[in-house]
Length: 485
Image (cartoon, rainbow, N blue to C red):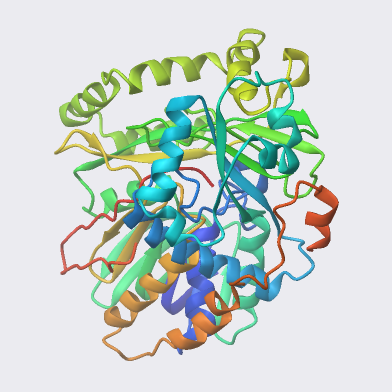
């Protein structure tokens, strides 16, 4: 196998698939290839069991500023519009209630300030501030067994999109592959990328590929490849593995708790599974692991490549993990994976959402959870907290922890604009058509179906704006506060 293409995209997860869709359907690029090392698309972090299936709008993510929520909101609406346009039968998603729950005077006050004073009520017209009685109507188990004297309030919206990101990834690739000049290669692992006078040559397990322009959307491996080409030398990764606990039929939609300040990890939440609402998932936990892929010892070496084993990397890790908030959090999360002890230690987090849950009601989900690479800046010795993009000479490296899946099509739109510059405006991007196919399909206004009721049957029946600048040798990083997808 070999080929010469105008554009090659490395990585068949939600990020690479979104870019393939945008470029194949809405540009006139003559030839495009997607290369994926696994035997099928969306086999790693985009797989439905390896993320928490949330489409983040920024409305209930309490670690987002209003400005960040505005940015994420547009990205989520683009993907939601795609789902409304192409998934009418709800095979890939569902729309359910979602809320962020405040328990106790301090958390209730924080939610009220956020809704009334910080502008979130204005930014999200469907978001409502509701009290105990309405919470009980929507999510009875959240109120049952809770001390009636305890103050509680929630910010709730019907736009709780629960998404099978693996299914969406395959949908995007299938629609793109219908276009002339588009080839998709699975079971094809890239071993080397070499700059040439005309672009790049890629050595793969199935032969050589040549291209004018390249995009590496391979998750944690994107930074590894970037470093091999001399980019991102001041970046390392802090890989975090997320896990979940399962219970039977406790929630109708999504119930989040308030985010801990300074943490780039999602607060524990509960939600009904996208394909089986009778299964409730709680999580994620966040355990530091020295691998780039969950459960694959072979990627320990890849992690060491990215880490570099140098003084700057070790000092950055030491500085970050010595934080008085982060260190206890990391240590506690190590306990959650232990047999017997883990479920017992995690139970209070579940009981904050559903007070009546007992130890026998939850079990650790086997085979669930992926690895999210948190970006570490070794110059600042700090977490960059979110998506990262490194831009080089006619090449882009996307390193996309959460909310990368939620903003996948928006990121693809931004990258497509940049690709047009790489091609010296030889090709055109029909952004108006892209928007008509996606965000313009997103339901708005009071005439949309309301799934805020707690009745699961009725819910079922309802069945970064700045573009990165670069020259031939510059790196840029787009920071987005991390949550989970």
